[in-house]
Image 1 (cartoon, rainbow, N blue to C red):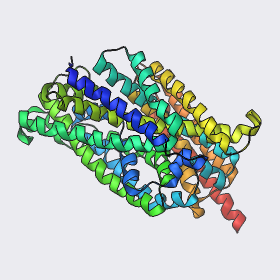
Image 2: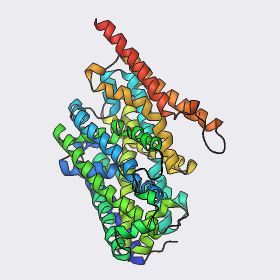
Image 3: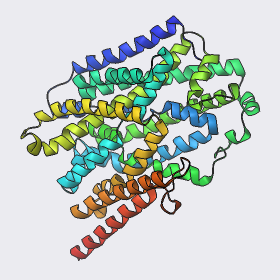
Image 4: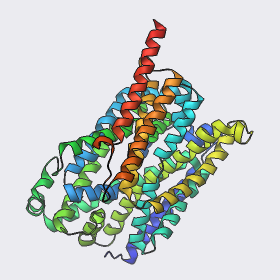
Amino acid sequence: MVQFSLVDLLLILAYFAAVVIIGFRAARCKRDGTDDFLLAGRTLTLPLFVATLVSTWYGGILGVGEFSYRYGISSWIVFGVPYYLFALVFALLLAKRVRATYHLTIPDKLEASYDRRTALLGGVLTFILVTPAAYVLMLGILVQLIFGIDLITSIVLTTLLTVCYLYWGGFRSDVWANAFEFVMMFLGFALIIPFAYAKFGGLDFIRANVPSLHLTWHGGNSWQFVAVWFFIALWTLVDPAFHQRCYAAKDGATAQRGIIVSILFWFCFDSMTSAAGLYARAAVPYIQNPAFAYPMLAEITLPTVAKGLFYIGMLATIMSTLSSLMFISASTIGRDIAGRLRPVLTGLAGEERVNRWTKIGLVLSALFSILLSITVPSVVKIWYTIGTTIIPGLLVPLLASYFEPLRIGPRFAFWSMLLGWSVSTGSFVYGQFTGVGGVPAYWLGVEPMYPGLAMSLVVWGMGRLVSGLQSS
């Protein structure tokens, strides 16, 4: 059971107020036009680019705490190394190419490279991919823990808090709030490590009180289990937040350097979260729900004020990702789906309508996220379901669109995307319905992502073959 002093509660309330004030203050600086509302006028400098990317890409703090508590430093291998690797690939191979396109969204690139049908399908998959339901749920759980209100009320209130300033300020409000949250997330975790060290000691204490496997790279898991996370980390290459921030950077060099600098910050933050997870396992060896590893460590370690700041750090880590994904989800509805269907749905025309539809999308996205988080109250299940079904559809056509020698015809791109998504989704649904005792039974015992990726690659290969024959 956690308890908070009045000072800690006031600090947390002050943090929420500060985020909203910063978001609305940023809204005052916005100018007319879709380019400004969706990408802050493409003016992100290196510090802002790094702050918003670092904070946005690290939202699953309760999940990281749970994994660190269960498996020790393996969390660094699973949640760190694969993402550093693919972020570096993105920086070296894609960042400048993405910025050079001067598009607004991923479906814009798909339409420019292929056709509108592929862009519409890409818009639907992007919307599902960035659905922030997992972060809505995590934030609701943490607020429930702090204030003792029921989970549904916590989810609704925190989602409304996030949406209100985005509705008025768009991407600029998101970036300014992210910069503040970036500072608070690092401050929070920078506090708990020295307090834990002062109370319990250093590495000798950890070695003496955690299972020996916690200090191995695999944490007691099979190498296949660890390897699958490298495939899941392919998410990085199709992640709309990476693309959006590259589109919003002032130039390609800023985007490339910004990602590389961000990797260094992620490394530092991972070192703190992994150390905190080990301290939690050593100091509180029997936690009923390991997702609360960090809160339980704070409960026995931190004094008043420091405890409030640590909780603010956890809240900031989640909220920065939640707000960014919520806005991307909204812009996907407003520009990429409704914007392309606009003549059919409304007869409306003109870029000025996109902002209105994005605001409508913000409301729809919030409602969808609330519903999903209440219906599927498991962060891990939400992540797994979305990642394993959507990535196989988007990955191959999107990456091929940035490299002329790899590009395929529009018909093949559409079917590569559709079949990659359909096969992985079909395999996932089949496994859920045929499983026994809550354990899914997938086709041939293969994870759904693999047959989906294989099908997408087969269609892409056919497209390359046809393109080669036509050119010869």
